[in-house]
Length: 263
Image 1 (cartoon, rainbow, N blue to C red):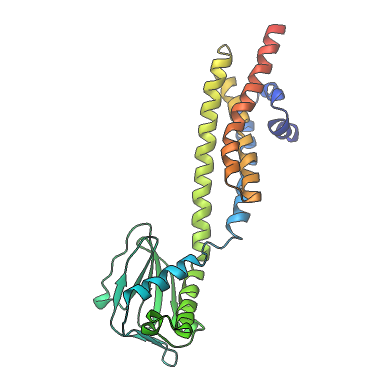
Image 2 (tube, helix red, strand yellow):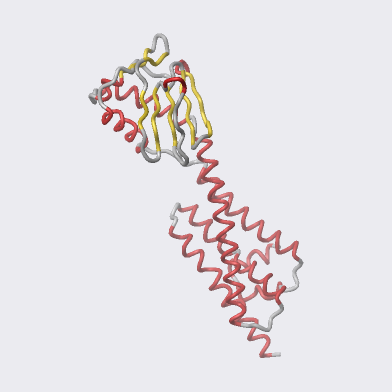
């Protein structure tokens, strides 16, 4: 298996010698390459923070644009009081003290719901996190002062929002990982299809079963390219990785052609 693994990475001209491999061996090889790539992806996704300073700036900016209001947080009672409002926008929304518990939850949007004694975070219409204010280390603040851009109130409000966003870290890390895994699998299958078509153009005489096996093997180099893309956190490498299976297919089937003519 190690030799097969090595040839799929370094010696595409030798891949043709595995034309008699059983489907189970081909599948196991693909799984090994995929696991290597997915492992590096997981290391990247679960060590990077899904949020930057941008959401905090966005929410604070919404409060400033909304203007004067009477919403305030009292540290002594750990409650939020005042007249509720809802601030929309793309990416992240803020719902404060909704009346009669009525509020909208747009798709593909993070919604921060600030209620009287606690807060919730939704993604689309799914609740992904909830916290009580008593569990958040934050001092009293007034959103009217935040709207007036007063530093102390703005700092405390941002601490509250930051705590809420941090409570969703695992969810968004997992969400990102699953999305990337699905993309990797789709891209790999696309590579295999193109490899198969290219191999027909190069040598139409090869049996379809053998052609499929070798195309799956040639496509495995995409996982290697993706591995380095995630290792160095350079997404453009994936585009080069998409071209590698085609290059490997040219080398693999060109070598088979030479063997056929020598025979």
